[in-house]
Length: 434
Ligand code: GDP
Ligand code: MG
Image 1 (cartoon, rainbow, N blue to C red):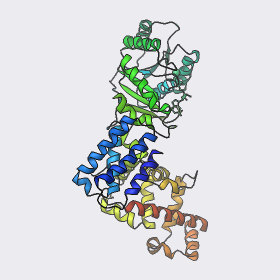
Image 2 (cartoon, rainbow, N blue to C red):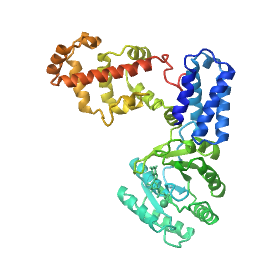
Image 3 (cartoon, rainbow, N blue to C red):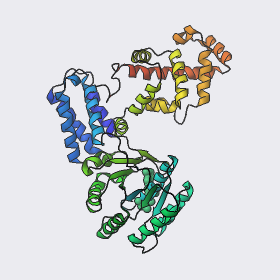
């Protein structure tokens, strides 16, 4: 994957002293190849590495970092820029929002219309779906079923209905029922053609939507992007929705989309399910691509851990005791699933036994076991021989196997914490604190 390739480049820089310009250039050549292999367009890849190069050799502050960290940090920041910088959201007025969805057949328009209605209904909006795809016989039926499933009414456009008539019927519905968000699903074709463009443009002219979102199938890769340009030229597009990102291992379309189309990506489709639509956070996606776990989400959650100042955190990472494990567990219990947290720590997800989600009961058990240890045992786990483990199991109402399993988990966590602790304090995670 792109993440693996980039990791390889970073690894080759690790432990080196100051880099010469040539060395940086060689590393960036590798980065460019990695981007191209991820199906990023040549122009985007070239631009990208050029900007990283300029930053990597130009900045004194950055020079004080280790070379690999410096390059990781710059690549991370540039990836965020490439993906659009800040998270972009569609405009949403207090009422009378009309969102028009466009795209080729199979891109995911109908599914996404349902997902959007579901998402915004949950936020207290009153959506109305409009099934304006009269091309495919089953299209309106598909949206009707979705609407029923989520309790959102669906206005169905009739065969051969003119866009003007559709507008009139929509206005009629809005006169009698309150809706503040109208989501219009439209027809697509397998390829762009004149008739499709004309039809969509005409519908747009009648409905004057506040947002016109182009739905793009990420699986089609960068070749979907010229299509986006055509839609924008002919109809006008305000934002993009990338679907099927769950299936796109390479991510090329998502990486190039902003740059090639100039339009923000509003949402990412992450599954076929009704709740499988997420806001598109460039910083998080960049973190994921770099294979460092969901770094920023982790930082946010870490900030929620009250009383953990930086020095404390650094000490904990370096010298992780059973007491620390218990303290972390208790904090985590208040924050949400442990597994979820662990998944966000770089490399830590590998430590989870496959399929084994650590649940609340497991945390309670761990709590009981560690509570049954003496202070000294918590600080010096080496003391825990067979007879002590037996005593602890009896004291905590668990079994010796439970205690052994906990110790194994602890050893693994300690390893991860040590790795994290090796990064310099305060900028242990890339993209921050430069
Ligand atoms: P339309 O022709 O543009 O309306 O496309 P549909 O909404 O009918 O979707 C086409 C196919 O893509 C369906 O099988 C959907 O379930 C699937 N699909 C849509 N969005 C996503 C997504 O984000 N992830 C995955 N895995 N499948 C999706
Ligand atoms: Mg459809």
